[in-house]
Image (spheres, rainbow, N blue to C red):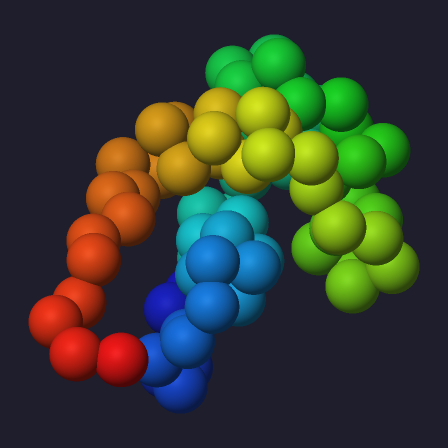
Length: 72
């Protein structure tokens, strides 16, 4: 089930939204990304942040690219 979301503004918001939108069980995300299920669950609930290597793995899994914008 897809719901409308505000466009995320930060990498954290984008990753959290990607996790929620995927509707994959955390155990499956762990298996496919190597990021611990407990870390994924706490991150998705907003209880903790991710280390950059974990964020990199998730960004790669969800095919997200970081793009530099012109201006500020």
